[in-house]
Image (tube, rainbow, N blue to C red):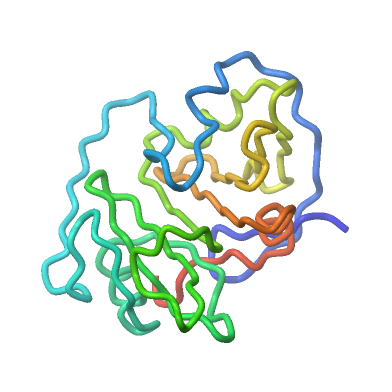
Length: 197
């Protein structure tokens, strides 16, 4: 079955086409959600304005409601997530660089836990698409969707899958400690924009 992924809230079907090997250092991209977001080649000039949005402070994780996440997405946008999930609450962390992590914690776990859980990170990245497209095929599974989006999973970090759309200024990372879940969720269209953007 062809992967499903969407730049908008409504998923689109894509035909997968293998991307030829392209030489660029994997080290600049093979990052997990616990590291600094993948770097952009261009200079990053955005600032984070969170005044009044769910009481969030850059770098400080906080449990928030779906309504508060929607408010954050409206204020900051775009933010991707895996929707509402049973028996979890949403932890949001905004990085000083403007990235947003949406992490799904079991109801009994508090914000800031060191344990690994499903996390969707949306990074402001001037050239997120170009960076993923340039991944070395010997070190990453890179596919190009019919609509032009690119999906990448690095062999050195198989628990994370990245995607980006052409001519956008963001890149998304899906991390899961459950083997194969990040890639599967990305390809089946479970990772979508937070509603209201």
